Image (tube, rainbow, N blue to C red; front, top):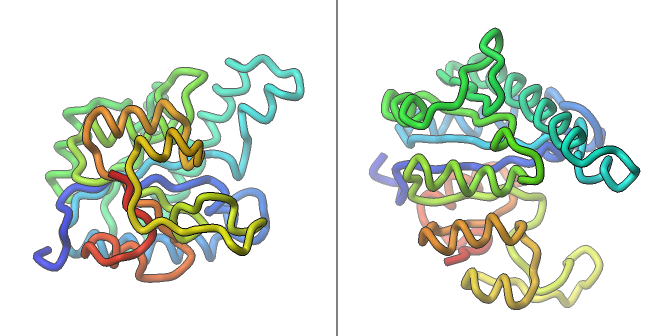
Amino acid sequence: MSEFKYKRVLLKLSGEHLAGDQGYGIDPKVISGLAQQIKRIFDAKVQLAITVGGGNIFRGMAASTEGMDRSQADYIGMLATVMNALALQEALERVGVDSRVQSAIAMQEVAETYIRRRAIRHLEKNRVVIFAAGTGNPYFTTDTTAALRACEIGADVFLKATKVDGVYDSDPKLNPDAKHFDRISYLDVLTKELHIMDTTAISLCMDNHLPLVVFSLMEDGNMEAVLRGESVGTVVY
């Protein structure tokens, strides 16, 4: 535990990451590799909560642009996050990581209903807590959910795992001269319109002085390096 800078962490995973190269659904190799990375954090007694997206199965905002009612589309997207959370829980428990799924939409047959105090108690007992179904409300992204849950559980840091190694001033896939930021303020993220998360999530983190680290999960060991305080990805403060 002493090697790590942070004691309690909120990790945001995108649904797209779970799909791997297949582009849709859940890639068993990806989720198994992710479970192994999380196990090393778990074994070091870091209190870890995870918020997972559902974009590998269904994207509510995309569906709403095609004519579907936005609220209905978002509810479908929330259910997709529950599917991902249950798959992640199963992968974690296969490698000996005790975990709990907490859903913002009541479905007691498959997951606990989200209760803040219970979530904190699970963390104190060294259980990984996986938050699913967003906030339970339409019009809120999983980034906003992650920021909200991080504030609620008193996380020391918010880790946003992506396929890109941090924050750039433009899309590095389209612009080879894009500038990488080692550190950047939340205010600069907003004024430069960098779109690393939606403005509600950014404002929540900024107002509650919650540090955010944006890093790539594609390289094994990056999560541990971030927790040690090494210069990996981008720190948003």
